[in-house]
Image (tube, rainbow, N blue to C red; front, side, top):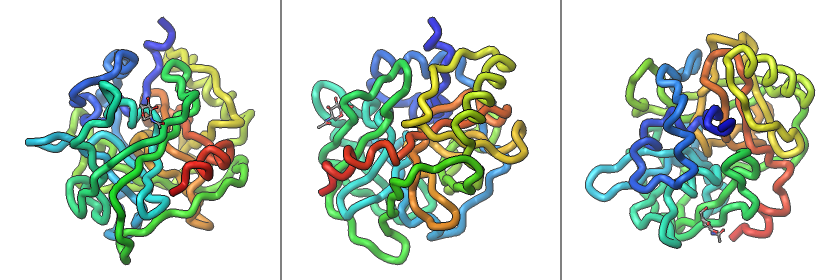
Length: 279
Ligand SMILES: *[C@@H]1O[C@H](CO)[C@@H](O)[C@H](O)[C@H]1NC(C)=O
């Protein structure tokens, strides 16, 4: 089964493994999980440096973290479709699903209730395409440390400096960090991304799904292996360092920090989809 060899970044998030009702296709998350995966080369984010950052948390007696997201409107958080699917069963979202905002600690700040969602209808868990969704939340009050991020729908080519923040693991077999971390990486052009993915997949012995560079964006740390992959969590925003605008969403990758590119939803392909759903 080729899709069993696909590693979704979610797989390396402790919270994802602890979800109460994983979808059938989440089996791919349990095989070939790189348990040594960690943020390499990232650094702890300064307080308030990522005011758009949201942590998806759930659980009644004991809360766990699953994914990142970004505040884009007073009652809307953008995230990855696979993050929403993981919290959806029996026709509804988990009633304990919240977004924690306004803190560098995933379980700190304000916990805002999620009341609905939009998941891209063509989201495909096998090929991990159209991995985009929106969460509708109770009203979020903006402040110095809670702000929406602007989205840029311009096509991003290679060699653009971009940044992501997330609560992905930072040490071998470690727990997810309490504090938000960040990493700056560079985008790759379409051909370079295809080439790098093919090269690293062969080297690491994985068969990733085919790439679609019109709807996916890829990044790599300038130093390649040993640096920075896994820098964020699924659903977290990828944004341009120069303008601060969000251009992508963390989607999937091969085992981290071994020199393979990381894959993001390319927001320029989803302008219509997002704008039709803004509230
Ligand atoms: C909410 O998410 C679930 C799981 O992804 C999906 O099946 C459902 O269609 C979504 N709702 C909308 C309105 O998109």
